[in-house]
Each structure stands twice: as C-alpha cells, then as structure tokens.
Length: 371
Image (cartoon, rainbow, N blue to C red; front, side):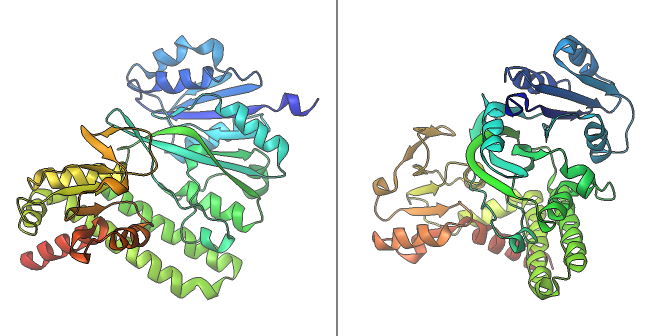
C-alpha cells in the first residue's frame, strides 16, 4: 500500500558540532524506520564533526560538507536534496524520542493535514524539563506567536514548492516567517501531545533572543501587510513592543544578576519558608536567582510531573505547601489560576510572587538607580 511506503526525510544541519552530532545521528538511526531518508548538511566544520558523520555513512542517505551562508541557507540545501513525502529538521544538538517517526507517520496517514506539531523536552544540565507552550489554533494567533516548536514539527515536503523555502534575509526567525507564510496560506495543522524531540537549551544568547523577537516582529508585520490584516496592526505593535521591552529587561537582568539578587534578599524575611511553583526551565531560573540572594527554598511545587526531586529539592503537590509560606510562581500563562488556587487555600496576596513580574520590578529598580 502507498501508506506503507511513506518516506520521511530528516535534515540535520551542523557546524563544528563534534560534542553533540553523534547523539543526534544515533537518535535518528534508533527510530528503525524503514522508509527513512537522512540528510546531513555540514558547513565545512574544522573539528571532528565530519569524522563522526563518516562513521555513520551507511545510515545516512546524503551528506555534504561545504561553506554556507548561515543555518537557513544550509536548511534550504537539505530541502533541495529531500525526496520524502514528509520532512523535518533535527538540530545537531537535539535528538528524537523513541518511536517518533512511527507516530508521525500514523498521524499523517489518519488525518488530512499538512503539518504535525508535537511537544519538546527542554534539556538543560542533564535534565529534561517540560515547559507549557500555548498551542495556537486560530490563524490570527500565529501573528503573535506560532506556538508550534520547530524541533518537533513535521511538514509535507510539497509545502516547500508551493510556499517557498526559508527566506535567508532572516538570520534567526526564518522558520517563524515560513510558518506564517504557510499557515496564513491555508496549511492544515494537527497539534498532538506526544513529545517528539529533546531540545538542548543554551544555544542562543540573551542578545540573540532579543534579535529573534525583532525579526519575528518584522515578519509578522510583513505578513499582516501581505494578507491585508490591517485590523491586527495596533495589537501587533503593542504585542511586540512589550516583548522587546521584556527582552531588553532580561538582558539587563542577566548582566546584573548579582545586584538584582542582593535587592531581592532585602524584600523577604530571612526566616521565611519559600517554595517555587513549577519544576521546569523557569523554575530553574528562579532557583538560580534565589541562590544568589541567599534565600533557601523548602522545595518545588508541581502537579504535572512524576518526578520526586528537581535540582536537589523535593517536589511536592500543591496541597502540601506549608501555611504562611512564600510561593514564587513560574509557569507562564498560568499565574492567575495558581494565584486563585493559593488564595482559596488561605494564602495572602503578599505570599504569592509572580516570577515574571518580580524580575521586571527588580530590573526596573536597578535601571532607575543607574540613571
């Protein structure tokens, strides 16, 4: 049957990736997916990357090592070489979860869709963290945040001839631009709960993230104009103004963390009991800040993990939070529901600390002092 022969093309782009490329390659081979086409595009690495690639040549359909003009130029080379019905891009420092490709084939075979979007684990310092990424369902929402993590996105290869490849004028956000292009063009997206990919954190600097937001804004406004969605202009300008503001604040926060930590220390009683709600990436960031402020925590609070410890601290259920404790709330998009839960269980407003708001206030006070 035709369905039994669905070929999936996986493209890995790499440059001086000797520390991680083998793990990525092995995760693709371990899929044991018969109709697999694996393509590796190397940017003329000067380390052992090519030596490692050669080690697995029998399992790689096509690979090349030559200079390129950036990651999206290299990804476009991969698209040009791909012959599968479905294509995905696996970064050289990321890797696939078990049986990902078989699951992807199942979703494409049983749904009339152009893209399948799964979840990702954020991998940092030896731990796989889960972050809630709000999934967008309306085309209008894509102008503000695609919400479809690129490392876990699989697309019908036919979308590229129809909508074009990655626009290399974007150095960081060409994938966002491409997604806007295809989604506003009518591509059908299936969002699933499966965790397809382990995504390595730390690949982009704080300054790089700021530039990414700038590029996303440029792409969003360009597609707004292209599609005639002028009704979104005011909201888009306000949305990206706020995101750029927060990105600038985050740069300041990272560069002045010790000063921010010392100010935080003065805000809370030294004999207080403290919890961090959210055993994830932002929970880790919160712990780092509290450590710099010499504020010890009793544990983490999380309802959605089977783990019992995180970062050397116990994870407890919400009902076990000790009375009169302070709770730093880190999950984005869930602050109000968590705040409501805590207030219903007797916590005062002063005991509930929104981590995002706290960072913003601390950074703002530091900036004011420096003026």
